[in-house]
Image (cartoon, rainbow, N blue to C red; front, side, top):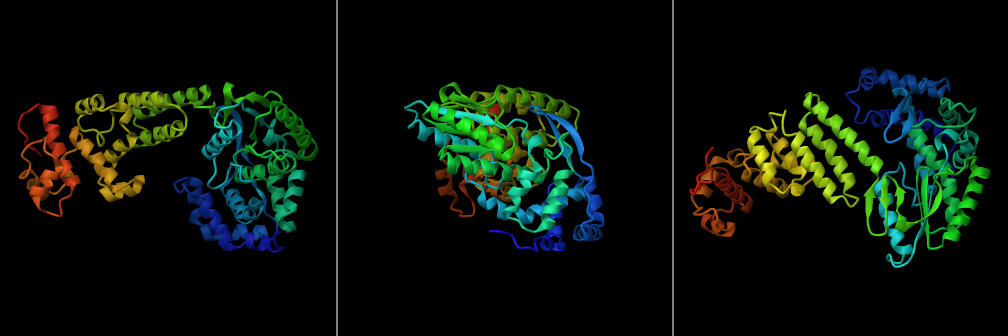
Length: 478
C-alpha cells in the first residue's frame, strides 16, 4: 500500500500542525521555549505552514551534549519548532510504515518496550528449552555504531516503497541532512523522534530477512540490540554469518565484533539491562552502580530542600517497579530501608512527629512498607479526598482506606481527620473491647451508613493508643 500523492498537503494542514504542537509540548508546558511558542501560537503555526508549503523551511542547528548514563552517548537536541515538524511528519507516516513491522520489534512503539521484550524472551526460552529441560543457545548481537552509520540513501529507498510524495521525501532529506556525523551521507542524531522511528524502519529490513529468509522463530529486536534463541549452536553460528553478510550488502552496516556472540543461556545473557538465566533474572551490576549514584544525588538535593519527599518517592518508585522484573526481593527491601533512613526529615507537611515516624518504620515490616502507603499519607495531608487519591494513584478506594487504617494504627494520622465526628462517637459507643470483631460491632450499630472500613478506622485509633501509650483503657482522643 502506498500513500497518496497529496500527503504533503495533509502534513501542512493547520489541524495537523496544532496536533503536532500538542504532542511536542506534552509534559513540557512549563518550559520556557514551549511558553514562547504558545504565546503566539496561531502566528507560529501559520508561519511554519507557509514555510513547509513553499518548501522554504529550514531546520535550526542541533545542540549536542554528552550523556554518560549508563554509557557515553552524544545526544542532539532540536529546536522546539523543529520538533513540531517531526511530530507533524510522524503523525502521517507512522501508521502506514508501521504496518510492515514484525510483532517482535519492541522499540519506540505504543504497547511495546523493554519489559514487554523481556516477557517475550521468557516465553521463548521456555519453548526452546522445553520448560528448561534441555540446553538452549542464544545469538546475542548488536550493530556497530548503528545511529552513526545509517546510510541516508538506503533509508530513503526503503521509505519510497511506501511513500511516493516527493515533497515528503524532500522534508525527510532535510531532517536527515541536518545531522553532521562526520560522514557525508551517514548517521542520525540520538534523541530525535524521527531518528527513533527511522531506526525501526531501517532495521525492519533485517527483521524481514531473519523471519522470512532464515525462518528464525525465536527472534526479538530492540533498536539495534537483538537475540535469536535456538537449541543448536551450529545453526546460530551459520545465521550470524548470513546476518552479517546481509547487513553489509543491503544496509551498509555490520555486527559489532565484540558484542555479537553465540552463548549458552545457563551462563546468563545480558539483555536490556538485565542478566537472564533459565530460572531467574538479575539486574546488571553497571545499572546498580548508576542507581546508587542517582540515589546519592537525590539525597543531596532533598537535604538542600530542592525537591520534596513526594518527588523523591516518585523517583524511587519508578526504580523499584523496574527492579521488580528481576529477582530482587532483598535488594528492594534494602532500598526501602535506606529511603526511610535518609528521607524521614525535611518535610513538615509529610511528617509531624519524627519520633513517631521512626518508631513506625521500626515496627512495620520494611519489605511490606510500600511507597504507595506513604504517597497516600502525603496526598491526604494535602487535602485530597479518598476518591481523588484513588484516581491520582490509579488504585481502588478500598486500597486507599486500607492505607489510612494502617497509618492511623501507627500514629501517623488522626481518625478525626478521616471520619466525621458524629460517626466516630456512634461507633465508639458500640465498642466494648479493642479485641472485638468488626462483625459484632457492625451488628450492634444497626446503621447501614457505617461501613466495616469506618469501624476499622476507629479500631485502629484505639489500637494506636494501646500501642503508643500502653494504656489498658481504650479512649480515642483528638
